[in-house]
Amino acid sequence: MARTEIRIGGFGGQGVVTMAVVLGETLSLVEGRHCVQTQSYGPEARGGASKSEIVVDDELVDYPKVQEPDIFVVLSRAAYLEYIHGLKENGILILDEDLVEIEGDLPAGVKVYKVPATRIAEKQVGTKQATNVVMMGVLAAITGIVTEDGLRQAIKDRWPRFVDTNFKALELGLDAGKAALVAQ
Amino acid sequence: MARTEIRIGGFGGQGVVTMAVVLGETLSLVEGRHCVQTQSYGPEARGGASKSEIVVDDELVDYPKVQEPDIFVVLSRAAYLEYIHGLKENGILILDEDLVEIEGDLPAGVKVYKVPATRIAEKQVGTKQATNVVMMGVLAAITGIVTEDGLRQAIKDRWPRFVDTNFKALELGLDAGKAALVAQ
Image (cartoon, rainbow over all chains, first blue to last red):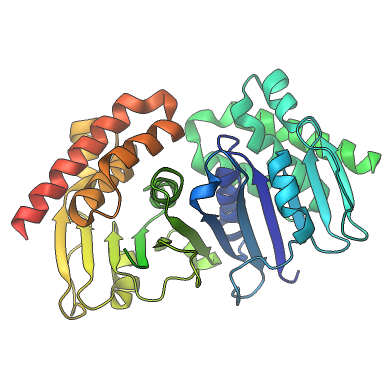
């Protein structure tokens, strides 16, 4: 697989940065690819849109900044409005359907997948904090950019004391991602 | 303050990435500066040296990659050997004295500060997992790049359920950093 750019947007407290960090660890440490994972912050980020980015390649990543993401995962309206125009034509848009609506024109050919990730975390896992792990499962099911086993390994490495809860969140996310694939 | 580059090196499980993420959040979201925080991984990173980097500036960060860090915080011998030659002349080297020894020549004029961060976390805080928070206090005391109050705010935002333990780790790190400053 060639260079792929992923952007994740949301607001503070949703675990956007942690999601990007764990995806970066899965892609590189577990799955053996090259990966640069970046947060860029300005003072305006407090309370506003935040984003984390991942560039993954089979070879050394030559240019570390995301230019036009292939995949945009978005968990807040502010992040949607700020970053939707960067999404590549024919790219993949994954959104939390309770928090984000499609507004305005999308880049041509974008595939949209809607998932209630926060609701699944809150109602089915029992904690909103698992939203980012649910979304990792969704991303894996829809894009195939990371494997289920790879995510399991990275999640176990990072949170050895919370394996059961996070594996449950991951499973539910995988299911929700598969459902969104069928619905698309 | 002009552009400052910080590199943190260690091995997996020491919380190097989390340390860099929380420092990035402190610098930008709490203290209002511009900041880019990056992890670069290759497949060789598993079990080897890992690093996380922060570029901070008063204006928008124009070039996101660390070129020659002003500050290098290092928690493993492998990371020391791999990254010490990148440190800027007259730069600041902060090392965990139980895990890293000075080997070979240092870049000219480097100031070295030795702190038993892991030992403090294990013996005085009661958990090795607090090593990265101890080291944040050390960094703040030695470099002044972040404020004590800023770190407190960022730590509280990120770990609302572990405030007491982390504040204790931070205090001990600040004390150890002040002691290392006097010893230098």
